Image 1 (tube, rainbow, N blue to C red):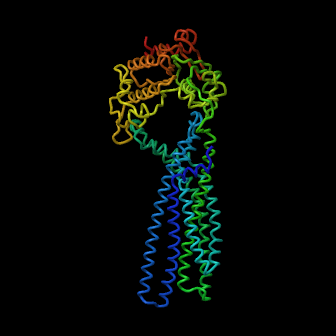
Image 2 (image 1 turned 45 degrees about the vertical axis):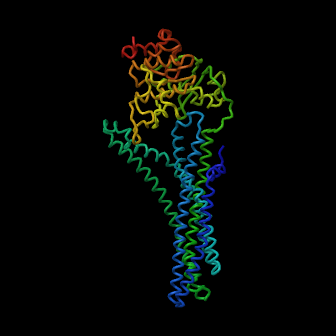
Image 3 (image 1 turned 135 degrees about the vertical axis):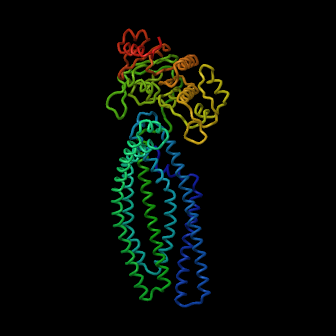
Length: 577
């Protein structure tokens, strides 16, 4: 399991030179700031003593150079901190992407997961400030030490007042950090709801229905409602924070009066000159700024610690594992489902119930049934994508829970109903890597089963980016099929994979796939019962259960629900005679 120490070590890797640069800049700033105070004292004292204009001009010129150097160092340090923050953000995103490796999709296809991953992605921006905050704290401590020494030499009580009155701010920032993280977690769903409706309102993908069904007003009002709820929730939280900050800020005037009292008393006693009084006033102001900066950055460290705990809980809950210790399976020869029950995390009722099914390598199987009968879920279970009960899903007779998941997936390929339209080139959409155009054309460009559209193979597809080439739904589906075939796995699940093709093209393509995959297992999930003609056996699903297994003739004779559905399809003309 990932540790906080490992996260920090990963973030710091390769950034030590930037941190050392920031530290060096901080040391430089503290030295010239101390010297600036000395020059300020000299300027005021010599002005009071009516020294010559040449002396005053020389001191002013020195102060000008010092101030310009301060500005240069401050902005250089800001640049270095921004650079570190950007690199840290990238490394944290890399870390999250690397560790988020779900074994199955069961737990992550939930609103809870979407909320938590959304929170963590937002939290990365806070966490990315960890290293800059550590750097800033070290730099501000150097300045604080410089100013404290200067002030302490003239009036010890001023330093005591500063420290005593800033302590409550530390406790406040610690409490505020906890409340802020709690608020962020509690409002992430509201943020997602508001954002998702707004996306529907303005993004191109939804506009055809927005225009056709004239839903602009409905969507606008729905977004406005969720947006207002988020604003009101945020304002209530911020109002509490503002009240607390006003109370904390009231300490400032008290601190100012106390410090002025001790400084004026020292001046009256003759312990301070005018120059010393002015320079100490400047030092006090700078010291307050440094201490406030330290307090704020300590709050960032506290937030980072809270986020770290959330990240650890997230990874533990979803059982992400970078290196599974389970034994790997080689070539899968058989799949068995034994009294398998399955339900989605957010549902109480079973989606699949008492499923018993044996699949052997080389079989052609059609899983048929009406919408909502559990066909697609069964397909995903067969692929190993869902968590199921012990000894209910076996590969080569071995419980799936005892096997390395990646080795299972190395045997599987699929075209799901919700296949992805990647905004990549045609080559990348099919092969996810380098491949020769001639090889793709040879494998998937036959005259009767052409899966590849006539586009530039290196051009980006889709309509999200400039220069992209848009495709039809049927073309995208062909590419998804080519992708599944390119993987060349022993088990292939096609879930309504040819729904966007015309009937003749569909039959031609299925014949080609079955011919090319001889000796391998192809599972067709469909509500089109005529596909049963390709199958060694048909698995008929009915309300989450297997209503029957057999050939078309056997099911037509023995399963009334199958007969009824087939006859209805025949009357609709959906089943070729």
